[in-house]
Length: 342
Ligand code: SAH
Image 1 (cartoon, rainbow, N blue to C red):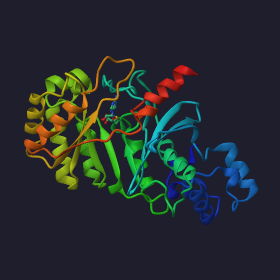
Image 2: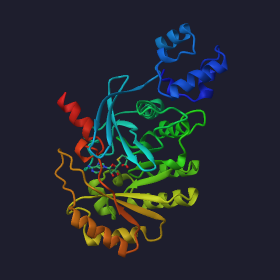
Image 3: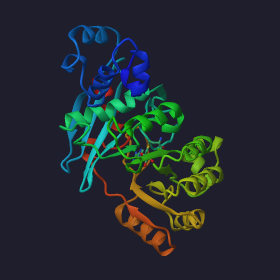
């Protein structure tokens, strides 16, 4: 069993033949990213038994790339040898880790590298949490002095397509006796699955909800995001409004600028119409071209013009600074190259 799949109270239940304070010691090692042989205040016999039956570190760092701008990209190995990736971004206020929720993805967005091989499998709660514990430890952090202050669920996979494990991850990473990362410092990015967006709103976790919009009309959106065949744009916007009304958290829209696809003045006008009565912010992102696709990024001047138009129309927006481009920072790109090369 992956022990990080469990809360402290669940572990106490599982190891009910062990004194609760020992289970608490075990838990505090697990959330700091330690393996059984390093848990020095537990008896050798119990550690041996644990190691035979369970997994302490479900995610191990196996490659690391550092960008000129300080962004780090990690490749992790899972216990079944699947590979996932993560990105650590340094900001003035702290370090943000971009976390994956699935191996691959089945959403099929046509600008994204994560989806090229489809969904391989969901990550367990412990495998999502294990990315955070592994990088926090690697950076010299523990539960008191955290080296990861913020989390974005924007790695490979669709978090709302792995709903239960993602929700439990949010609860565990926020646990006071664990890493205790504030919900307000966590953003979940979705391609827009209304039933799960509503279920998430009803939990009122205070996380930021980010929606990958990428297009202001249904007709255009369905051409780049197949998910909108099942869930049209109007239902996504309705669910976004519901999320805001329930939680009071401003919605963030992600908008990848693709040349000739979604970057015209008309697109900007449509986007302002769509978001007119919403409390929201639009993040404009220049497409990171994926080798297997023919889409091109909007050039810098046009991106600036698009942003300016949005501002004139009263839409709060920023062009996101591109970071880690030299290490293939976008979703799924690095994993793909490494797997293809090796
Ligand atoms: N499935 C979720 C989370 C993963 S993708 C979602 O769709 O939101 C998160 C973000 O990665 C997307 O919104 C997009 O902003 C970014 N992304 C994916 N492929 C990209 C690319 N080729 N270039 C730039 N950004 C990309």
